[in-house]
Structure formats: structure tokens, C-alpha cells
Length: 313
Ligand code: UDP
Ligand code: MN
Image (cartoon, rainbow, N blue to C red):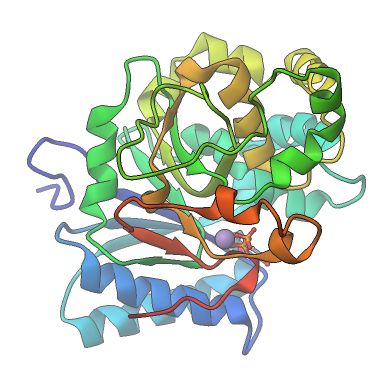
């Protein structure tokens, strides 16, 4: 009866945000590619959950229906209105944007922090979810990503792969100058044998939230996470790391949590979110960029962040 439950009873919920879309916009093109890609690459039926605004809903539905028709595969889908979501996560967005955003950009802020309240938005029946950017491409079966939930340590609420640029080395410059021995902001040297769950021993590059695994039931019942979302807790964290110039939304928060409370986050290997943006290579970090971007793991997901072109072969 519930067709999108896998053999182990785990629900295959995929979440995307698809808002502020206009005719001919890049995002529409990315979304179309991703839906086609997911239908093609998934060995399991997916439950797609799309957060939309009034004008993007129709566009999204048309794309999904068309891609289902031409692929001869199926997926279940439902839509959530961004204004409805914004109300549900309002308190979280207010706290986070105070510390991590420039003032006066509230509407975009909702998009950037929605993942931190997704456990309130998602139906209670959803125990797991994967929230993904629209600019990703699966080279291999998405069930490989769902399988990662089984590897979560008991205490983990979220799963993220590392940020593959020196952005946090940059943002943490002041903190690093005062703490010479810190590994926070160092590169990790990812290779095929490295174990991502010996946390941050050699270096911690921070996390990228383009692919985010959420253990929704555990998040809902976590008193610790509830505490960490409070203004006082975020203030303590950002002051401890002199973290003032963040600008990457939720992933700034996951990065700080990852350093301070590593038990809450499962580090996925870099092959689950291989970012392609090279902006930092051309902007001051040409000498060390490659150490951050290096990834010798099997590539499951490519992430065309900062509008990078994704090679399809
Ligand atoms: N997004 C959106 N509308 C926008 C911009 C972004 O819905 O106008 C969503 C979309 O899901 C997108 C995600 O926010 O994939 C993050 O943006 P993007 O992937 O462009 O950021 P990057 O990965 O380059 O930092
Ligand atoms: Mn992206």
C-alpha cells in the first residue's frame, strides 16, 4: 500500500526547494534535469516533496508530469507552499539570520534555513528525508545515499558531506590566528581509504548542505538540538569561533555544530556531494584549493554549485 517504502521499511523521501522561478531561468532547467535524472537513476520508487511558491508550483508540476510520462517510471509527489513553511520555521529563521545573514534579506533567509525546521514541515510519517539542491546530478543509484542512514552512529541527526573549498579556512581566519593548533578549517586529504567518521582528527573543512540527510524522527525528539537552535546557544557558538562573515545559510550552522558537537552529524564521504565550483581557486586560494577539492571516493553525486556546468558523461 505504501509503495515508496523499501524492503527495510525506510521511506524514500526526497525534498527540494523550487522557488523564485521565472521563464527561462536556470533553476527551471536544473530542476527538469534533476527530475529526469532521478527517475532514470533510482532503483526504488521515490516520494518527492517540493517546496514551491505560488508561481513555481504549476511549473514544477508540469515538469514532473512530463518527465514521468516520457521516462515510463513513476514517483509520488506533493507540494508545500513556502509561505506556509516560513510560518512553521519562523522562530528558527529569525535566530539564524541574526547571526549568519546580512540584515534585510528575509525572504531568501527562509530558503536558506528551512532545513533546520524540516522536521516540523514534513509529515510525521516521514522518518527519514534527503533534502537536495536542484543543481545536483546522480551518477549512481540514489539508494546508495539512502543506505547511508543505516551507517549513522546512534547519536547522529544529520548526514552531510564535506565542503570541498577553503571557504571555512577563509571565514575562520581570525579564530585560526588565535588558535594555532586547531584543525578547524584545515583540509582533510580525502582519499578512498579515509574514514570520515574519525571526526576531524587531521582537518575539518566544514560541511556542504547541497545534499542533506535528515533523521527526522530523531531530530523531532532531540532536546539537545532544540537547545542548539536557541539564540543564546547560537550566540555562544558564533562568538567562540569569531564567526561573523558566514553567508552560506544552514551549512554555516552545520559546520559549527560539526566541530563542536560532532556526535550530532554523520560525515558522508565526498563522493556523495562532489562540488564543482572553483571560485576559491581563482580568488586567493590557488595554492591550496586542490587539497580541499580532492576526492578519490566513488562519485555518486555531482554538485554544480555556483552555477558550474555538470559534465553528463
Ligand atoms: N533556490 C531556489 N530559488 C532560488 C535560489 C535557490 O529555490 O532563487 C534553491 C534551489 O533548490 C537551489 C538551492 O536553493 O538548488 C541552493 O541554491 P544553489 O544550488 O544555487 O546554491 P549553491 O549550491 O550554488 O551554493
Ligand atoms: Mn547547489
